[in-house]
Image 1 (tube, helix red, strand yellow):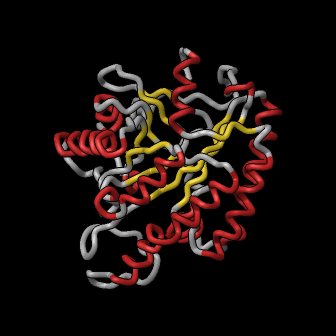
Image 2 (cartoon, helix red, strand yellow; image 1 turned 90 degrees about the vertical axis):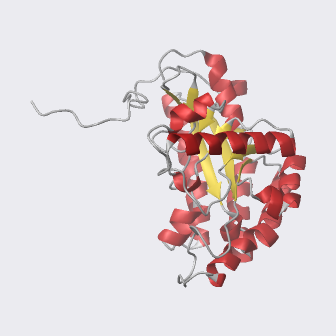
Length: 299
């Protein structure tokens, strides 16, 4: 018999067809959240999302293209979210507190959830040693608490780069959930070395503007159509199988905040808002809190 392959050991395989039955608040079956990625990159060094041809540092083209999101795109998106009454889970680099504190204050004033997303997207933590990674998680947690008076209960690693210990370190730093894993349409309870609970809340790699608009070079109107189709199909699945599911939409303001893309995004989010009677419009933290109340033994 062949040997089994190495595994992460964080959770068992369990098909979607063999899960416990439960619902979201008010007996709703589909939870939808917006993951609003508000990021800052160092100028002239480190990693950077390449939207155009990469030049030697300082890469002014790509730096300024991304910075459009903080200066213009994010504000246009927040106006759209306000118009439609949509909350967000704001994934923030803590360097924003030094770079553009007005933007974090606007998120806070809206009542959005602040989610830890590293200090800057110019670096990734996956290759760091345990001490350095633990220090980053604690520093981001403490910065958000000190600057905004909010406890960051969730985390998304910059570039979704994890070490083998990241879930353990997150639980030990007091985080209650991670958005790094995209393996399911329902939350998953992860094992940690301390035994402290950590939820994996589904985070999208399909309904995500970076892989779709940049990597696959999809037009904004097609990305908007994806969102609409995903909403309608997931609602149909929840009814057919009597299951509670999660749908996230990952947005970056330097992409969807561009005017012509914003117009298509408005169409997609309006579709979501118009079906709010069937949907739990929430944040990832609210999803994690609800799962903690269910006391499901195996999920």
